[in-house]
Length: 105
Image (cartoon, rainbow, N blue to C red; front, side):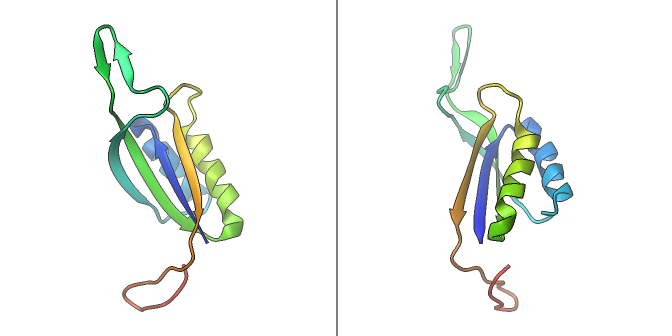
């Protein structure tokens, strides 16, 4: 299993969620977060905003499904500008359903 965590622009959140649903990934966890990337925030005139609002999305998928999920996130989130976000893919060793105790997705 793979855990895919994506940090995207808040205005792209709904588009990314819809792209994931259309690709067959209906389950998702979302957080509103603050952060900055390589651009170190945003400067407008004399004002510097060093923490920007972002959306943090998290899903767990079978290994073979990971590339399709990543593509769905990229297609929904990409504007071509700085601050589009990042995607992190990591290995998940085990997962359990709390209600049933069942292992796996």
